[in-house]
Image (cartoon, rainbow, N blue to C red):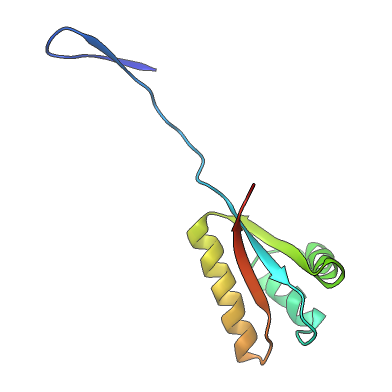
Length: 103
């Protein structure tokens, strides 16, 4: 904590606020058309997951209906979600991702 003295002689306490930026989850949603191999590829290429982690996440999406691709600040999360959906559309897949605040 830092103290500052004003021109009137009063001492004012100034608190430094070092907040972590709010984090958001990028969620992959299951569909009946996007291939498992494509999901693994985007998890590795866009979300920088290892092949083992990418396959684990892909299976979670397949079994549970959705899975966490990553945790990022809002702008990065939206960028990765949009980039992935553009890549999916260009390959003919309806893959859907959403961005939700982390609880």
